Length: 144
Image (cartoon, one colour):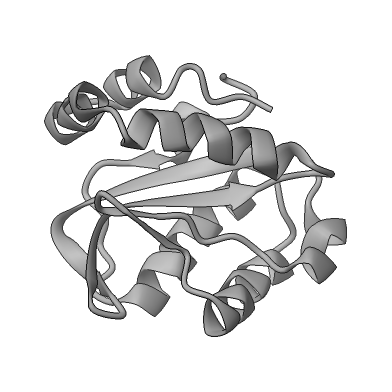
């Protein structure tokens, strides 16, 4: 898990107040972790204009377009939790998980995230998380 989600890519008090800023916040964590080129954040915004990445249960999973795959150095995710949900085109997103999937890794990562975010106890644990390690304990099975 540490190769996909690092402590440094976890924020428990996101600062964004709208969808676009939340995408940028999640994307910058991916850039800072060395997983993607800066231009990948633009591709995340581009993806959102074609299809919403809101998944339900308070989760949005912004990710880049297929054309931006070359901007990914390694598979990684970022995790941002917001105290006040972000309006994601009419749906409340409390968790924004940026995804950079090298090759076909994004499918494996999406499956693992879907498992965590359809489990009420996992969501409750993410709500209660006080440290990045608490988040890692819940999302520890997310891997590529």
